[in-house]
View 1 (cartoon, one colour):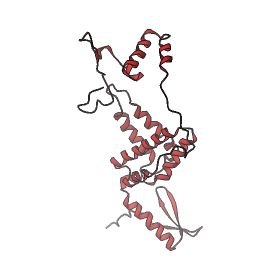
View 2: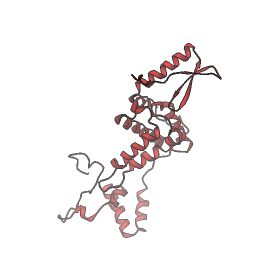
View 3: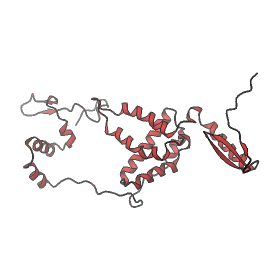
Length: 249
């Protein structure tokens, strides 16, 4: 009868150094002096960790997680007309430095310090504080999706939640001044120099408080002109259309 296959690694002696070591995930981890209590305790903790991580998660790298997430996100974050939403591009931007720094790291080994290193890289390249906090939040969401799909241990996601956002005045990441509205007198002067169509679009914004993109997306077929006194515009798409019983405002 065949002997049962060993599922957990065993420590071996590195004769040149006299140290105990164990081979896990393609590399040796040195434990300390061969036969010492410290080496045995370190091995025990490593094996305990391996036993608590499901087999399906033991070889999943950050690159694997991101690749699978983006395949899902590429289909999920789309408008009804097939165009990607801004969220999809946001995720692609968020994982850029994650791939560079920790792409080959196993998801079971990724923790708060690794996430903070990615965040520090964002600071180094000059991203503003609020953008960095937003992108770090998106990275957490990627790992949350990994938990949902049994690619990431749930404890890893909970650990990442411990990383606090960058606080104003306590980081070198810049805080850009808020974007304010243009003075009305400047807007009225600008209208006089615009093409008729663009001028009408600006006037409509002033009357209705619409965003530029919302004005740009108006189609004549979406405007109900049956009442000569009032025209009713119903957008062909809006950000809450996936929710039931919510009409566009």
